[in-house]
Image (cartoon, rainbow, N blue to C red):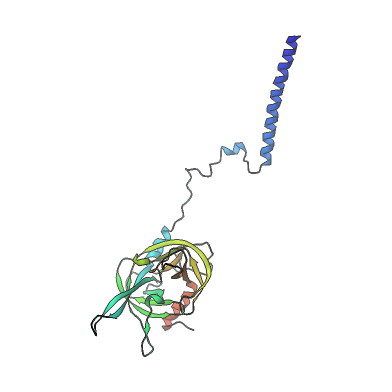
Length: 280
């Protein structure tokens, strides 16, 4: 009797274990089928991990854009004649520096009016300072101020030099907030400097120039004194704006810079080249 009872108990335990295992497998299968984010076990062995160190994501940088745009951006130095200590004595001194952008092979350069701003003489004619341009290769050449538009803060220079590389002109019409941009210029005297950021706004109205900057491009790319007149480019190295101003309590970059949209600057530059002044 005792042997029969022991055998029956052993059999019941064995059947219970098998039943528990079967129930556990059934519950796991059900949970997996209900969860749409759980991949099948047979698939996991064939999928590479998302952050696998063996599969590097393609890096995004501005090497090509910088290589393309930098030879077209110049430093612009202005020289004014100042009186000396003794009566009748005067000498020419460098009084400012900024940046400019070569836009044609025949030496047309765009910059800001406030970089080369002239004075009006008694005859009502604007007299511009002497201007010197330093090219990407370090060569220095004299520049002639063809004309300027104080209202929009645009000025146009002309230099005589060989092998000039004009920048590729883009468009500012389709710029989107958050789009990558690159500023190229001569900040604080450091030539051929590149900084990058994004478009922070495309519709900033500011008191830049006599008529103000209308729907200007705002960017957090570092812009400092000396960047004025330099290039604001897209990620393809195309010119989409002329850097013109910053908002800062210190006079240096705090991540709020502004540029004149190239679609607006283009017409002003063409008018100055053709007629010596912008059309009204």
